Length: 194
Image 1 (cartoon, rainbow, N blue to C red):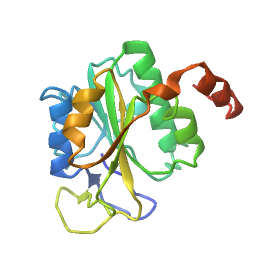
Image 2: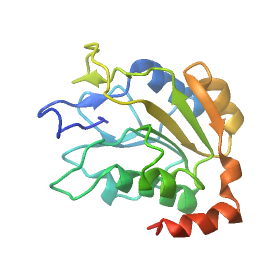
Image 3: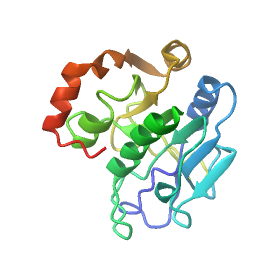
Image 4: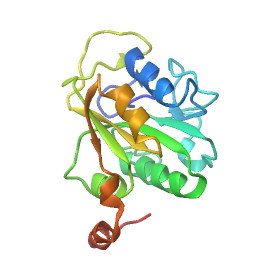
């Protein structure tokens, strides 16, 4: 989607830059089956797109092989959701359907949603080199940078492919070693809601 910043800007749809859409498609073998938080200006062109704010992708089943998620970054006061809800959905979907999922999210390693949904669940992270990623605004590249660093989170089985594609875009880290029993015990401390 839209890094849906309704909190920061009233009527803008924030979209994924072209180079990252291409990279996600390359990891997924050329196609994205589902974009659950798309918008009318999206260039993702997934097979299935749920357009926010009209269609809430969090309420749908994500029974698709490849899923790309660029969730709203601010709180959705009307629905009572945050980015954490989208990341929980990524984890649940991966467990239930074994889907391959990539999500573009702010780097916030100190937050509960990273501790509960990324560490111990995701397979890899690409910390993007773009220090101020330039989202598309209403489908156009207007040159404004995001106010935070961003990362691509990968839940899937083909770390090598993710690495090979995303290494040109950032520092790629294999975090699959965090999925053992030791991290599982630590996750309980964070009251995992998954």
